[in-house]
Amino acid sequence: MSKKIYKFVFLTIPAFGHINPMLPIMTELVNQGHKVIVYNNPEFKKIITKTGAEFRLPPIKIIMPDFKEFKDSFKIAERSLEVTKTFTPTMIEIFKKEKPDCIIHDSLSPWSKIISQHLKIPAVTLVPSMAINQSVLLKSKINTEVFFEIISKFKRFINIYRQFNDVFNKYGIRPPSIIDIFSSKEDLNIVFTSRSIQIEESSFKSEYKFVGPSIYKRNEQSLEKKLFENKSKKIYISLGTIYNDDINFYKTCFNVFGNTGDQIFMSIDKDIKRSDLGKIPNNFYVDEYLPQLQILKKANLFLTHGGMNSINESLYYGVPMIVFPQMLEQKANAYRIEELGAGIMCKSKLTESILDKHINIISSNNNYLNNAKKYSIILKKTGGYREATKLILDYLN
Image (tube, rainbow, N blue to C red):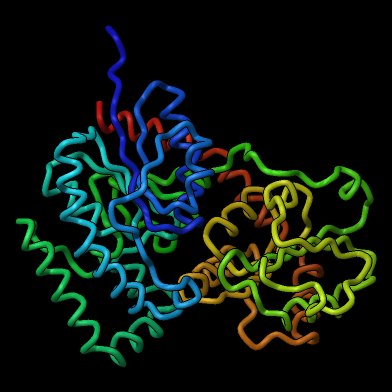
């Protein structure tokens, strides 16, 4: 009996943190002979075509807010609503002709859920963050902040929800709860972490599958091996790809770690001028892009913003963290890292004395390292992108 060949379409918001975990799944599906089509903005064409997938520009560019505005959850929701209104009708007409067997989308694409349900196309949600449900919002340590944000902008909140309801009704779909709108929940939801790391993990039923991080061999430039050969402590500093332009943060790190004998790898914003940083200590290797996985394999400590990909990859390699969250989602991640005993969160404005204090806490207590290693063992057993691919194909079969 010959193997069935499927046509998959991937839809996601234009953000590296959402697209990167999907890339090896695209590759795996292509390698197994399936047709993979990906609609996204032109800046992602290069990394998508490397998977062997067919890249297509959407008929209407998916314009999300400046990612530095992600601290305002309502701006994200309003932009998502606008995209849903404009993107959905055009893509429905395209998909009527395209006839994909399955739509694979991220958890922040409500338009994808509308398209799949309206056309009765099987769909799978890929979750690149902590999975979200009512229990997470009510019981997590950020629940008070979420509540006050909603109360302070209640009219705005109601207006957004009402308009989303109108869009769902327009296409003959029963409007989901506000939480389900922004989790884009399907019958199969694949989460890129382990169940033991997920916040309120027991509240997620069998339709949620936890496969761990999407760790794969990336086609990226490696650092010279000699940088890792000495026996000094290796410390990696990265605030991700969005909130990474805080020059004072970098200068504080220079003052604390400079000329200490530790080897420091620091990733900075591409728009920062070296001259703005002042004198860079000799034990720092600074660049706008660094191969994160290569460094984490050797790192003893990770100073991170707490993005989901970063904390997953840090735990995968057993590296304890000091987390400097820049937005609410990252703050939730940071609290979870503290609960797991694999790191600590900086809860105040960073100064040299505070950074020194956090480093001393981590380095003087082996429990942080031991717990990070414990979750490394767990994550390496989850299956990653291969398990995700298997789950998708099993779902269709």
